[in-house]
Length: 524
Image 1: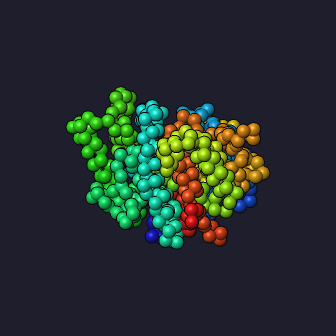
Image 2 (image 1 turned 90 degrees about the vertical axis):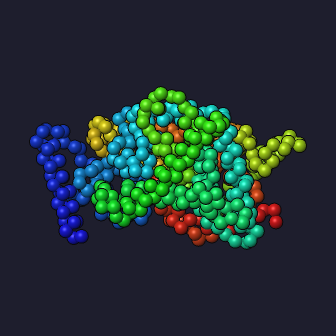
Image 3 (image 1 turned 180 degrees about the vertical axis):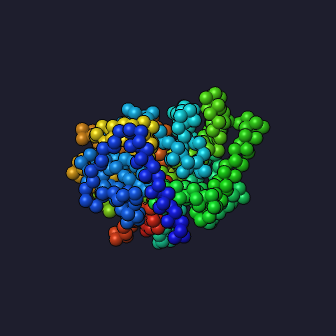
């Protein structure tokens, strides 16, 4: 092992010397040295590796502190082997990446290679024609009223058929549960219905065990494999030596071996669902409203010619639907547990919306329809404010195709990675004012009439911005507002005041060890 690390150090040194000599030999313009405050100065050859390793357990907070110490909220990170990149929490730079110079900042081959085994060429891992073709079809489908209605039905079925009964049973027994786990199971069941029209039954019905493979299709094994594949794929981003995962993959050892096995199970399950759906559509001709059926029925030539397998398309949407809303709601309920004033305002608004129903109106008695959810401006603000501080996707990276200068004056060279840190951005006084660290839903409300007032998507980047703006934004809010309104209307969920969750970075921001809550009925 010692010999391996010595060999690796020799290779890194050789690469650095070769790059330096080549730049001088062929007259490349000298790079302007970045300035660093004490404690952030890079070391020769290994860059910021020591600081990264010392803060690996709190990397988001370390990056936040690093950008906060820079006048422009932008930090030039150096990694071993001469790899450099820009990490920013400056909205002007984010707008430059995501809109003004969109074509110069694709995801790039490095990002794509890290997730290719899992996501293939799906929309969240694609650039160029493959991305444009999927985006075109998805954009059309996500804007149809029929899909929004189908999503609302799926959310209603899962919420009132499983999640609320589970919480009510927990309250009746006087027990507690891991709310993060319950929300992740809910989100996975829901997105599988939306994407496949398939129910993996991760949340239990009364009398069932969670994750029980009720129908024999392997849904539980698929869910476990999907979770492991997402977590292990995310781990590739955190290697101190960036390409070390490739060595493990070639040797088929450790986490890469587990990743290969998990991905094989995910792909096999997805392929079987797709084959069954194709056969069913051919034999019955029945119209279905899930995403898979919609993409299969699409006659768009640009998508058909892109060569992107349906499996890659659907797995990307599964990832987005499973990981993001459950992450957002877990942090939301934790914040809410220490804010009884916010809980009261949410309950007052929900009660007011219900009271506005005409007498005798029995529509959706146990829930809220789309129009009623749109009336819940304070609920919308409270969820959005939580995502400002705890964005489900806290960090996103792109690649500079050509030399550039950012709006804040930072020079970027071709081949560098550039990353916008939305977790850090939510904590910058430079962006949000002196109360940036406070959870204050009112900042999103119009003082005149209390309606929700959106901010620039380049300041609040939870749903990305520009051409890659999240297509599922409205559907995510439908799901989250439904859960918040219905749960708080009926239940109290308490978190131990001394509990301080630790962050674990997967592809989304999760809590290490979950969120233990005690559930009580408000009707007792």
